[in-house]
Length: 616
Image (tube, rainbow, N blue to C red):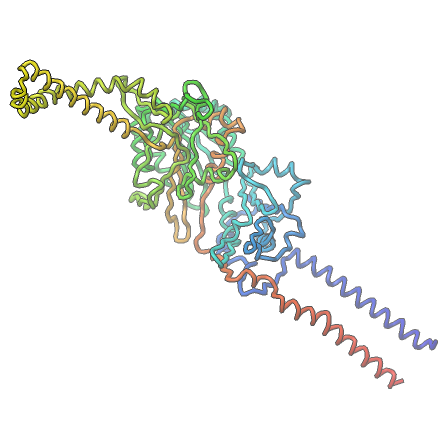
């Protein structure tokens, strides 16, 4: 073989190998750089993988030295590359459609903001880490569709857990992607100092020795639950100290929950003013637990009724004990019972139980020695809202748990007792005769002579013509008048008992208010009212069979910080199919890349060979 040809051939092979190796190396390096620096090309008209200028403006004030965010994904890396968005159309709710858009947007946040990192966890290999770091509730589900946004600040952590569907809104044939809105609002809500839970003391509350920040007595598990969710837990005596002043320099704002855990003595006007002023601030909320038998708190009652729309009734709930198979009672006296869930989605209170009310078997909601709550009808869950001039705030009030009872009724001993409908017979045996005698006596004194005389005047002539004696006429008139009194008394008792009946009365309610804090910032405030401290007691929160812990978890999570940036646009996706490459385009690009480009390369090679032969 001609050495010259061998030389040219070897050179050509070397060049081909070098080009091939260069192409492979370029693809590998480019893929790694694209993954690291999030180099993406949005081929759709909807700009999904983008962070708005407003989000950049809102997040610019976050201190990277004080806040360390991690966005966790639990899906397999290959599943996060599924760019389909049509899964919702075909009903593939368990597929990972749409996760790639959330993931790539998170990576863009990681690129743009130095305080954000994106990590992937394996649900099997990292199961212990997930269990130890992300508090789970009865109804919560950790799946490949879960996204956790966590912030560790000052040695404490706080986090938000979302599902894939929280990033998308679907209405009929229109889909919206709210990734920018979801990530930015979550980062804002977790920024700055950790939220604070203030347990008020000084009014007989069962929160341990005064000033002892380590001993919360029967509220110890309740305080620990706050701490598990990233709160700093403190005690405060409003008769001696005020809440910390509001920091006007903090554009994002702190957050706090004030807990009144079973006060037995009234608040002073100054204490209520301090409480009112603090809760009126941005992101501050209130929880009130009041046991039965405490009715001498007019100052506190006025604040709760006028400002939050709730009043604690002077009664105690007694559950049915007649049939153990169907009874909601947990003790022989009926004072410890399971309450009914609020299942109406329109009620604000349903937000605290929605995570587990879709379970086939509902966990019990434990109450002991509970009183019912009267809700302001204007703010009830049947109404839209009511505007309070003091804060220009829209309020809505709804039940969380209810008890199937007869409504409050005053009896001779001054007590007021609520009964299950099923113990109606017991109620009648205890109180019917006493009430009957009372009403019979009242009607006899006021009506007997009048009825007697009217009946006598209208019938005496007929009775005389019938040959009745005066004694017989008087007896007939007496029988008629007494029968009339008995009928009136029976009629009253029927109405009395009927009026006392109520389908359900709330033993826990949630008031939700919202107002515009700044031009583009809406703030929500909440007040949880519970008719018993038992609901948040150590016994209730330590028993996994009860839903108490999960309800309070939802409330604490909800109360953490509630900032809603209004100026972040959500992306409208008119046709989810448009986010995938159409079949016609797939065929076209396949023909171009696999057919035309190779054919052009072959043609160029043929031309080179022909020309070289002619040259030689």
